[in-house]
Image (cartoon, rainbow, N blue to C red):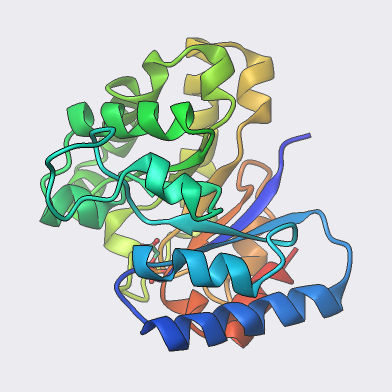
Length: 252
Ligand code: PGA
């Protein structure tokens, strides 16, 4: 049975102190809630990883970075390698977020290197894909998103591919308050799963968690997560308040 995952993406928000408080608050409520089959992850800035790992029980709240370097190590000023992320105790790396693709020029080529390094270091990539508004308006979103996957993670071996979590995030829904309808989300998630089955096989497709991201909040999470091919969410804005994030986790 594939995992249900609710992952927060804090983006460039919170000071170290605020982040630690937020992480502790989430961890406390998750602990009070007790046993659950939902995997909870918090994607923090690099600077927060070590402290957040120390401040929570990582068995109930996993910790993720939001990026990693495309090189293993060396003279790359300002970069943070996958091995460095691993050494903090974090277990996940968000890769290919549309903000990184758009503002920092991330290409399929760089992402392939990042995915490989993430996997080599025993970290789980949360791999983002999704179309911009003009592609959605042209009706070619399926081809666009499947092509993003073909250029990157579809070239992995089935064994490595099974280690990945995919996040479908329509760019027009990110931070805009405009959520994909439950039908739009289900349709794309099914298209992605069908493409995985065609590339690998049905068993692999059935094992991969595909998260929805884009203005997911406590009000709409329930409806989105009720879709058979939506296995959770990648949550931006609503992950910055412990109560909202928990409500989303509780949507399951
Ligand atoms: P949002 O962001 O929930 O604020 O729309 C989602 C994301 O970019 O991961």
